[in-house]
Image: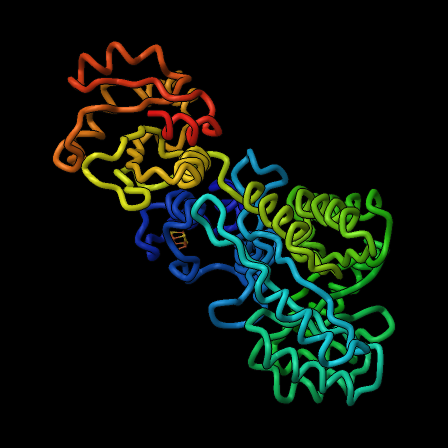
Length: 442
Ligand code: SF4
């Protein structure tokens, strides 16, 4: 946990020798608390103080990196229990299990589906992150399937095998892809530690009991392993949520570094609805990785949408660049609609304008990412702001008419806007769903 300036001061020599460039040790401590200077500026720190200060500057939940290149996945490094306190930083990695007892053609088909699980929502690309290969057959088959999968997908890999030799042979050709190794238990701890140590690979530690988990991670730390991911095994949803919450609380509120690691859960239900509901619960609290079995696109889209919402900064709504956007083959005769720059609002309006098949312009006004009514109530979507946006966009040189369509919810501003802009103001529908019919009849 981060220390205050006074806590840090207690650990300093208090001689005010000025060698750090500050007049007093207290002044140095205050700067250290703000992370404005580095610890090595004081040459007189005892080893014990140095250790305590270094530990306090580490994140309470370790950042673990899986994979490499553009598709690498960063998990952990979270700092709060509730997103309204600050924000959640590293979105849950979503992955799919491929069993090595499937045929090659079944594996290729499933991989093709997984690779195509990409969506665009409110201007952002949403995609899945991992493929986990699980051993059910012999070593040779596992290695064969790992080779097949790694050739066919750019996603991060998880190697699920208790066969140390199979893992070792696989890593001899795959270690540069930084796969996640699944998993160390109390039975194979030293063997797994030995396996990942040389390559510094991330390792899943599985233990149903949190006190025992605490001991296992401390043991692995003694062996120099820090890239750990915690898994409390197969349990009911309620028990799993309890574990995930306790792990997060222990790391953030009790500064328990032994549990300060990202987490992994496996969700396998033949019913894709139940699987999606269970996985969604773990996205909310507090899974860093979810591995599942089904690959239905409706199921994955729901999870990716939930993830996008949970990992958006609650203090900074998703917004688009405020400017004039042509839709379709817009000409100088095309209608002009005005809305806010809140992504969800803009993309909803855009979708409806596109479906009307009437080429148009949408003027997005800078409302700091607020939706229409919120922005109007906060005086961010006013006649004055709309006129400013019109002038900035140069729309009067782009269209040859002077008709402006405003959302029905802010009909009340039409008189003022007409007066200030000199344009004819037309009140559009209240809901975006009314736009296609409105534009066709305009
Ligand atoms: S160098 Fe160390 S002991 Fe000297 S003033 Fe700075 S903090 Fe204090």
